[in-house]
Image 1 (tube, rainbow, N blue to C red):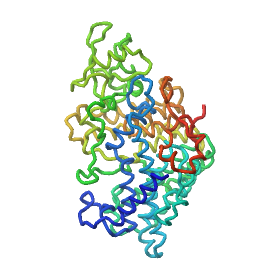
Image 2: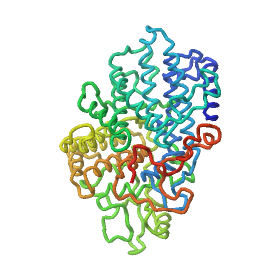
Image 3: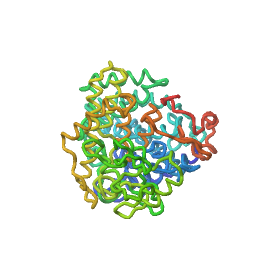
Length: 560
């Protein structure tokens, strides 16, 4: 924890001692690191700021984490066979999430301390700040727990407040205890947003929901549903998870969710200042073209004839078939072309993804001989200046309504806390798929990029028909496979961490292949190991040392 302690002290000094300025944070929000007045409201913004590398689709994620590690584990990004293919290309990118979440926690703990020291009248005015900070911090912390497992939590980040260095060495909380605490706390937080006062300046301090308490309530409830579903499948918190799901789904007026696109939780790109983000920044780094390669696993599940296969006799291999295939693929990737070395013919307008099961010579042929219309050699690549990458109007989505409906679909299909109801499950699945397609094409439509709006958005009738075709499709082994695969496709390149969670929790999508290699990490990991600073300096590391392997499964994960 020594690195954490150093971060906490430096962060605390930055908050309290930095010179005052009247400049707006991002033209609208006060930057907590540039004000003398340490208030609950300022510190809420500070929590959001520290979490923004997790929340935002920016460089920290799209160079350091998603394509180079999480996207490999989830197979949402393309990569080719090598002895080190399961190792991250930039390991500090993972360790940085560990240190950053504790910097965020320090901001939150300081906020909590100030709030608890206030008079009842002051607390009544500031409660919304406190609750909003807690919800977003909980979201960030559980996401980090999903990477590492057990973490210091209940006793972490106390050094700046009690000056007790020895006591500041925090023990590791069990991941299931962290989840249980947060799920139970969110139960009270959600409805509380209806009762609290709207603080003065809440809308100018809150750059996530702009002071909208209804959206904060929906965010809290939807996060609780996400976490509850994760633990409801198997493990020690099955009952906790299923009880929470039952309570939420059977009491929609008490626990409203993010069910419509208008409810989506996101950070708006402010185009200037510290909230000026470039969606997918990091994908374009020279020499790192592999970061934007198309995943053959995704293409296989978007196209009815699968990703392009030069050795196949199927003339539609890699081709998009309108009315049958997933229209989101048109926005995801650039189609490419290649001379088929078996036939000598030019195969064009094909989607070519990486494939871990083909021979090295075929992989090399694809990598060197294929070419898209923009001059990019090799596999199909994520489209630039389109719906996502370099779209300056792409919002930094935190919770979107399709995910909520996928979660509802699974709960009713499996009977997690509620009675099994395939009709409700099917209805929720179809709504989730339709909303996902609509969301993708919305961002393509508002993009100012030169590669946006290349394709006509599907009609509502086409979207509904496509969504309806997935329930009983023979491309899935069962209905759960259909739900999880479609959820995985929705997350895709945008939320690889959640896609990986679904694979570990359910074992779906079916048919994913992870070949064993001879490297340090011989197969896809179940977690990542603790940062070296934690190993070296936290005396409580000994309590978790025996489980600090790449293959210790999460408590909520499928065990076989």
